[in-house]
Image 1 (cartoon, helix red, strand yellow):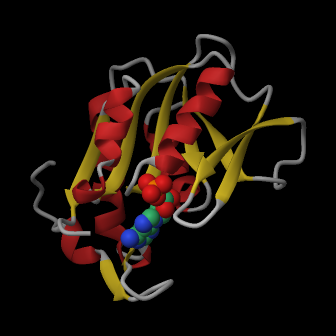
Image 2 (cartoon, rainbow, N blue to C red; image 1 turned 90 degrees about the vertical axis):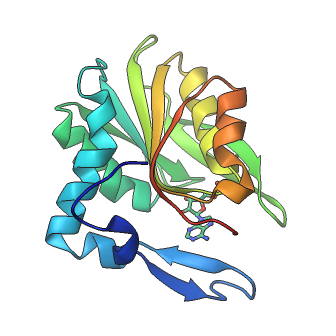
Length: 180
Ligand code: AMP
């Protein structure tokens, strides 16, 4: 967590019971729509990695594309999309992961990264960590070296950052919503 003049937390809108009853949806479109807030958010996401030799940012569909693209620009490196199954045009490799009900899959182009390339994983929010762990597995399958994983929002009660720590990845998060 970091201090700033801009209250990023206040720029996130909470939609109760979306997409289903009991879920507090943390909507970052209000943050993205605020110029000063967006600049501050991207600055804070990128800050710990300025001298970390990041060679590529990998962002998870879809909000991870918006944030990850901006972070890549800030770090002067390329961007690699991790997409939902069946969306990438060239040859891709996949990774299944568990949702609350059922299984989903994400994919990455098999030639997206070089073996040993230093990659930063970016998404808007970490909840249970299932999506981020699956993304990390994809990056490792390509032989990439994961420098870290950065998220705007942490839902600490759901244990996602602990799950990433268990596979040796450090989480960088900007704001937290307790009790989800
Ligand atoms: P998880 O795999 O449980 O860590 O969930 C993370 C992914 O689901 C991220 O891509 C988030 O955008 C999305 N997500 C999960 N829970 C929420 C929530 N309460 N509000 C907004 N997005 C969420």
